[in-house]
Amino acid sequence: MVADDVGEKYGDTVALDGVSLAVESGEVFALIGPNGAGKTTLTRCLTGTRTPDSGRVELLGEPPSKAAKERLGLLPQDFDPPDRLTARELVAYYAGLYDDARDPGDLLRTVGMDPDKSTWYGDMSGGEQRRTCVAASLANDPDVLFVDEPTTGIDPAGRRALWDVFEALADGGTTVFLTTHYMAEAERLADRVGLLADGELVATGSPEALVAAYGGEQYVVVETLADPAALDGLGYDVTREGDALHVLGVEPADIGDVAAALDERGIDFDALSWTEPDLEDVYLRLADDPTLVEADEEEVVA
Ligand SMILES: Nc1ncnc2c1ncn2[C@@H]1O[C@H](COP(=O)(O)OP(=O)(O)OP(=O)(O)O)[C@@H](O)[C@H]1O
Image (cartoon, rainbow, N blue to C red; front, side, top):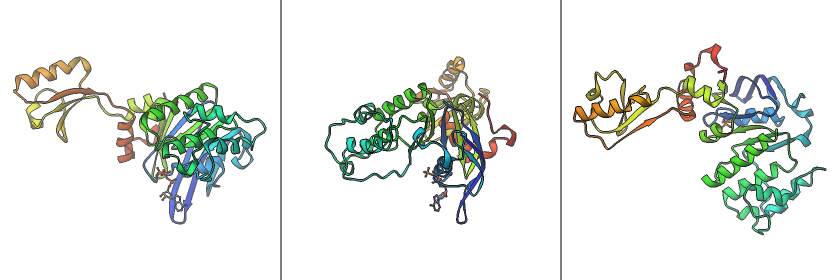
């Protein structure tokens, strides 16, 4: 799928401001970004639910309106099926729209739902509703699956179970376009991640490449109320973050030196741990200050 310089407005609100990206067949692409960044709008443009004001969109080699619907799966963020259907009835309804559909019972078991439960959709917990919706989006065994915040409201074990489902689909060659606020989800599932902020794609790359480029330094966290100046002269920048000091740029091999310096200087501390940057650090740094990415560096090569 391709978005080429896509722009979209709602009245005076610029939701997308010249977004370009290409997702290869079989790739898992995760779109992350703050509330209101334009993730849902971009998903809508890519699926043909909205026609962008400007730019070009391609899905399965066609304009989205012409793409073969039986090859697409879509779980919108605001998917709102009828309340008075059981999980099986709901998935069977969507399966019934296709000649070659997957078995509703199998699909529900895959997402951790009991297909024989008679609870109506409207009476299910939020997490059960979302799982049922994920099952419905897979009814036609899609080649390209769009899932907008698929695991929101699902408990941690259920979320991991759904990650397994998406991973199995990706292993089977399904292209997955995912939006999420869970950085661990993007890190675990995505071949590439795109960070959208204020309608602009700030950076794209593999999670590893993004973390290496923009995650910032590894650091030691020292839980202490001591002044950062107490660690002057060690050769590291030291900042205060809440009840801890962060000693920046410490390699794992040098953690002992930091511990020894704390001891020698009589600095009282409750705990000491070493932390590597992850995708959450990338998100927090770039969403706060997109200019950290140079214009010609938007695509971080894995
Ligand atoms: N139907 C609409 N009418 C007016 N403005 C809209 C509409 N839909 C979205 N917007 C605005 O467009 C911008 C992008 O919204 P969008 O829903 O695409 O963001 P998002 O990144 O998906 O947010 P979230 O993480 O909260 O789901 C926001 O400023 C939003 O208020």
